[in-house]
Image (tube, rainbow, N blue to C red; front, side):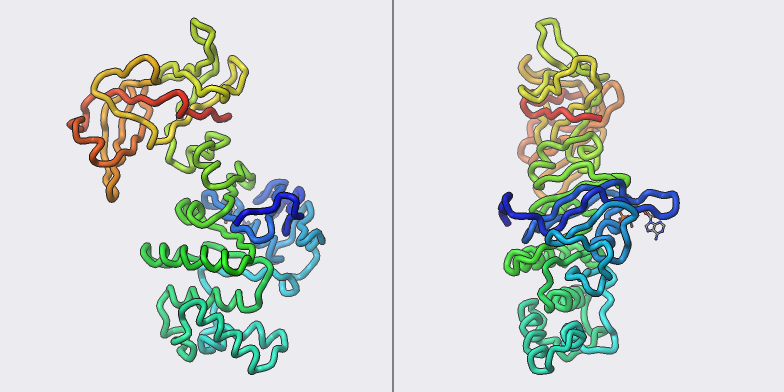
Length: 366
Ligand SMILES: Nc1ncnc2c1ncn2[C@@H]1O[C@H](COP(=O)(O)OP(=O)(O)OP(=O)(O)O)[C@@H](O)[C@H]1O
């Protein structure tokens, strides 16, 4: 979904904080959510993702700050009168109602007539590919089918915004992938704004237009999956994503006056235009594991390189992740296609040289 930057945001968090007693779960958050976007909020356990979502749903009151929906403050609006239904991993379907009765339920509560609500519920069951189960009990459905009922039940009221809290976490791996594509298609077709909490990077990155990465109640970075993957803003984000090798060090200049980063693993040339500027400053150089080369001999001068011993390997499908350790004890991962490894005679304990082009490095603050 492409957003129109001139359009007012659908949701605004303006200095929103949430405290439980003396514990601050969410710190002064500023966040804008655009109409029609798929926004994923991710971060490690306890970082405040669910609390953020619950404040938007009206299930938790902010301790500070203002949440606006379409420009209007909603801090004091009770959850039932907000247009922000929530789908959980635990689903919360009514076991004593049939599939179609579950989907119709919210329409019935809104006073819609029987024929109309039945027709609408049937449409949604059809759209979710579960029309044939309309009269079944919830207990007669598989996990994936239940998840579709839960989605149909939330979407039948055609909300402006749908809040999803780890909705796929109880499903097996294959079903998870299928449901991700169902969700993404559904979001595109309906244009409903999705706010999706997960700690799965693959879920967030495969579905979302923008991803929010949180740590300890604070937003570390907001951006498109590509922006965050290619240019993590802090070493926390780079480390959290796990796809970059991180070399902490100090910015300085070499004998020719060129900016470099001095690290315990060696001095490395910096990417042009991404030097953070201040000599003496602490920073980290990150390099994606897909951007590193493995050599038997030290490579030419133009590349950054470090000597390391191989310590392990892992094969997933057509790619291999090879693990190395530098002399100063830093672990480095390199990801390659199997065919690129054929001439290296990989063996645990064997010494290699790892290299990358300075242009493939990325500097982050601490
Ligand atoms: N009602 C509450 N009372 C006290 N502390 C709470 C309450 N709800 C959440 N917290 C605390 O606030 C912090 C953030 O919780 P939250 O559920 O938002 O985290 P999360 O990022 O969604 O984590 P997870 O991925 O484990 O669900 C946690 O340390 C949690 O223990």
